[in-house]
Amino acid sequence: MALLFRKEGDAPKKSLWQRIKDVANADVGVILRGGVKDGSLEQLEEVLLASDFGVATTLKLVDQIGGYAQRGLIRTEPEFQDALRRLVEAELREGNSDPSLKLSASKPTVILVIGVNGAGKTTFIGKLAARLRKQGKTVLLGAGDTFRAGAIDQLRVWAERVGAEFVGAKAGADSAAVAFDTIDAGIARGVDVVIIDTAGRLHTSAGLMEELKKVARVIAKRIPDAPHETLLVLDGTIGQNAVVQARTFTEAVPVTGLVVTKIDGTAKGGIVVAVHEELDVPVKFLGTGEKAGDLHAFDPAQFAEELVEA
Ligand SMILES: Nc1nc2c(ncn2[C@@H]2O[C@H](COP(=O)(O)OP(=O)(O)OP(=O)(O)O)[C@@H](O)[C@H]2O)c(=O)[nH]1
Image (tube, rainbow, N blue to C red):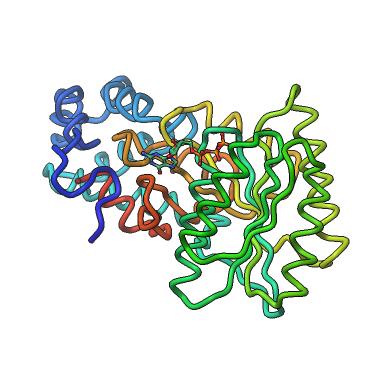
């Protein structure tokens, strides 16, 4: 099984379970004796908060663990660890949680990719294009991040590397116009999937959100049920700020899936659970590095297991 939180050969990071045992030893002891009462789960709560689960998810998990302990369902450390793993997985499967990428029955499927600069949008698009090419699909990348010239070149390089087609424009061009041209080219060339990059920085966040709305409107004008996926890319190392960012974006456009990047750089994967819980949007992919293969289709069972036990 591919490792999410570290590469083969890397020294293991401290797992969530190890941190719970280090910091919350007293809690573990109390829980195992079935003696859960007010205050005895405080250290567990602190570890979960420090691991980016966020307040709402942390309180829910602590409450559930407390309930299990009181009912005598947790009597050994492995039972405690297993309960936590199962609760995290259940959290990830709650509500709107289908991790599969929706492809349209008619060509092309249009995927719009949004997120702030530096979150790893362009790298994700390159990796997703590589994955779709491997599945035998034809792919066209549209460089809608016209705010930054480097982003256009970076996407072109990815297109060449993975054998995808490319539509670009000069830096400063209208992002919505690039999206329109890309879809036109996708229809004319009969490609299977069109992936459109967007800018992540404008002078004001209100300006950025207006631009994204316009891009989505222009796409829908050309293909009424498009974009078929609007994927929001979040940096997994920035903690609760990712939740704040996600709220701003989801208020502007209907986000259909989350991509959490740089998971290889953190051992605190609680943010993946927190964003899903807060937004009721499925996590669809995890990024674990800069290479084409460093993309994982999201699997709640694998994630919960590695987060708690790895
Ligand atoms: N370790 C690690 N680095 C990543 C991952 N995804 C992206 N990066 C790196 O993060 C940096 C930012 O990624 P970009 O893809 O350029 O980010 P962007 O959101 O497109 O931002 P701009 O290019 O500034 O528009 C680059 O140095 C990437 O190589 C990941 O999953 N793991």
